[in-house]
Length: 366
Image (cartoon, rainbow, N blue to C red; front, side, top):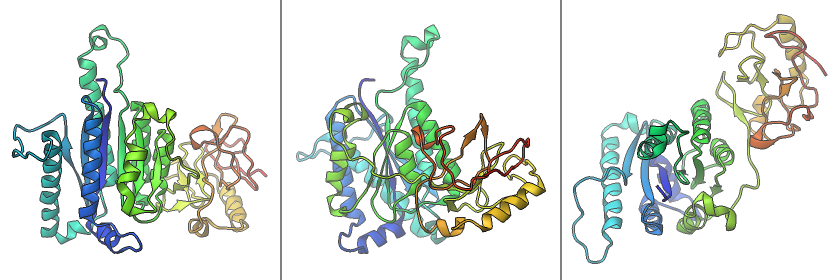
């Protein structure tokens, strides 16, 4: 497969799109969004005959496959002298499935109030790409000769979101990012409406993709064609928008809140917004004296994790000390390395608390 594969995840939360249509000075409703999206999808198909396409819809409480170029039905669209048949097939199939699923939401008011299943659609798109990879390897000599499996040429996922971050989905999002890295899939993200999303910024940065927050929603098609239409293989030779800042804050495992100052388990690296006697993930018990020292030092911090979560700053990540993870409330002075992780031994943390020889415990050191 010499063409480029593109999977598009579309956030179709009705309430968020209603707010987007009312937002000034650049309102964007669903009708205008679909016309620009379909033009972008047709441009991807027209770029090269071998290009493949899949579109996933993230509805409230469920995610569905709206279109797949690999699973075309036997039905053919009606003849139209003013349209190209492949374009007509994409447009009619996607719009028919969207209208069908939106009608089911109106019949169930409880389902319409559920959060958008953006993570579910992202997971399905990764599974779809993995299936294409397996089918591609089955048709090559690598499968019969026992060689290392090949990967698709420039597989990528484009997320078009209008919903804010759902902190409860932090772990599934990170697992999806790690799976995309293993499959060598590039994740691009475009936040059309609402606040900037921490998770999509991290997904784009860690997979080598682009993240764009729309300031002019009336120019959506220009953003899509200039930033996301070129495949990753040729983006190095052209000028595409890049992220000037990346928010690496994590969500705590206890309350699912995004925090700047967190306490990391020395065994499984779970993040907590406050010292805990027992890790809820690996069930490791920490010494009482260490907890007392951490609680005393936590009260002397200039900002608590709760107040800092309302004031975004530079990201915080776990630190490695002598090959072991440290239970450390990280501050914004952490020096980040590749992939957003701190350089070993180069972290500049004021008042940091590190493991001090206690196995499965929390130690205190200045």
